[in-house]
Every structure is written in structure tokens, then in C-alpha cells.
Amino acid sequence: MVDRHNRDLDRIPAPQPEPLAVATVDSHAHLEIVTNAAPDSDEVRKVLDDARDAGIDRVVQVGYSAEQSQWCVDAAQHWKGRVLAAVALHPNEAPVVEDLEHDWSIIAKLAEHPRVRAIGETGLDYFRTPPELRKRQQESFKWHIELANKHNKALVIHDRDSHDDVLSVLLEVGAPEKTIFHCFSGDLEMAKVCVERGYILSFAGTLTFKNAPQLREAVKIVPDDQLLVETDSPFLAPTPHRGALNTPAQIANIVRAMADERNVSDSELATTLSNNAERIFGSFA
Image (cartoon, one colour):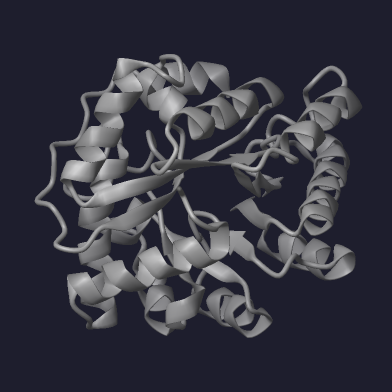
């Protein structure tokens, strides 16, 4: 994942959007990739300040490796009131780390930190993982589900080209009460299954892409209390800035697109999303 992340640092940031009237939350970001800086740096401060100026005053910083999950915890500790952490091994990391159990032990310890409110991003990714490595990926996913259940924390799922197996593993192991499909990528029928099971669907800038009509159909049917919004910064900047470096400030544009699809006001939706994030992750204070 490192090489791909470094390439994203060369992108020009998406322009600062018009601010939302009601503050809300970016439920999934990777600030260390956006900034390539220390968790307590001025670079991180600027990204958070730009987000706040756009009406996004809280961010969930999400883990993908043992080392980077420590960065998440340090950021959440430093930016109290503004940042919370999730920790995990990304599904693309799990099959290739040298000592999986060693990295698990680091994640398990970090999961005990009071500012870690979710286990993620974990899950399955069959786009980048060849069949011979998928069993190890599935084992890691199951381990993370059990960790989330042990600590009664939310589970943040990465699901790419693996919908059926993700849903099956959740039933097999037992999904946590707060199970989040990060950057939901399924169709209307999958959204209905997730809603029926009580899962939370988080939508990103992909909602605005011309080639994603299925996401615009899906977002219409999700109950208010099962909905989140995210940037997945620095990836997936929304239209019309697709291809730019994404930052949490772009939540403003995604919320407006979601509100249009759900036929509600921006302020009403921002309030709903803020309340959901505080319920799912707890207080950012």
C-alpha cells in the first residue's frame, strides 16, 4: 500500500468548498497520507482547520497497519475534541506482513486505548489479493471481528469485490452491534441486506461519480440512523474534483450530494450524520 499512497501525495488538493451551515463528521480519513507529517504537526492542524472552516469539525482517523495505527492513536490523543482513532490491519496488509500474529498483538494493545473507538479498516479485498492469499486475509478479518466484539467497539469494513464472503463471514463470526461498511460499494440489493441486518452504510465521494448510479439508488433507502459520510482521504475526491487530493473538507460536497438524493436539506442531513457519528464512536471530547 505504501507506494500507492506516496503517489497520492503528488496530487493537487481539491478546492476548499462552501461551508455547511451545520457541523458534521468525516467518519473515515487517513490524515497521515494527506499530510505525510507527524500526528501533532502543523500540517495536520491545517487540514483539520480547513475542514472546520468547511463545517467538518470532527474526523475519525482510520488504521491500516500496526505502525500507522499507532499514528492514529497519537493523533487522536493530541487532537482531543477533533479526532478519534480506529486501528487494524488493512485486508491487503494482512496476507503480506512478515509476522501476522506479532502485528495482531500490537493492534490488540492499541485497541485498549480510550481514544480508539473502532476496529478497522479490516475486511476482504479480492481486487488486489490473489486467491492463494485469501485464506490468510479471511483469518485476519475474523480476528478483527472478534477483537471488536471483545471491546464492544465499532467494526469498520473494507469490502472490495468480496461482497458475498464479507456478508458470510459476518454471519459466521457474529457481527458487532455497530458494523460499518466503509465507502459502501454495493448495489441496491446489497444495501437492503445490510439495512435488514442493522449494519451502517458509509458513503464517500464515489456517490458523485457518473459511473456509480447504483450508489445513488442505495443511499436513498438507508434509514437515517444507519447512515454515515466519509472522505476516505486522500482518495476518492468527489465530482467535480475527481482525481484531486481529497481532504476532510470535501465532506461538505458529499453531504450536499447525499442530501439531494435523499430529498432533505443539507443542514438536516448534517445533523443526522453528526448524531450518528457521536452515537457510533462516542464523544470526541
